[in-house]
Amino acid sequence: MDDIAQVTGLGKGSLYGAFGDKGKLFHRVFDDWCTAVVEVAEERLAGGPDSEALARLSGYVHLMAENTASDTERRGCLLAKGVAELAQLDPTVAGRSAETMTALMNLLRTEISAAQRHGDIDSSADPERLAALLLTVVRGIEAVGKGGLAPETVRSVADTALAVLPTPEGRD
Image (cartoon, rainbow, N blue to C red; front, side, top):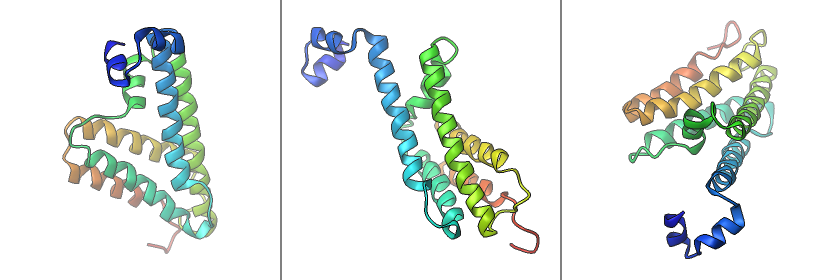
C-alpha cells in the first residue's frame, strides 16, 4: 500500500477508505484486468460475416502470441498469475477467472461455428472442443513464453494451432 500511495499521491487512509484492504484492492484490479482480457477478445472476435470468421480467429491467436513474444520483460498477465497463485485459496479469484474463461470460450466457439458455416472449418468438428483447444493454446502460449520459450517459437505455436484446425475434406 505504501508503494501505491507514493505512486498515486494518495494517502494510505484514502486508499483504505476506497478499497477497504489490500485484498479488496487486489480483487478490484483483478476484476478490471479480467474485463480487459475479455474486451480485447471481443474486439477481435465479436461479430462480422461468417466469411471472415477464420481471419478473426487467426488474428486473435496471432495477437496473443505476438503480445507474449514481444514482452521482453516477461511481465506476464495478471489473470494467469492470479489464477496460478490464488485460485485454490481465494474463491473470488477462482470465480472471476472461471467467468473470464467461460466468456473467452464462448467467443471462440461462436467464431468457430461461423467459420464452420462458411466452410473454412470442418462442420463435423465439435466447436466446443476446438474452442477449448484454442483457449488452451492462447493461455498456454503466455506461460511458455514467460518461461523462456523463444519468441519465434511462441509465434510458430500460434501458426501450428491454427493449422491443425480441421478443414472440410478436399480443402487445404
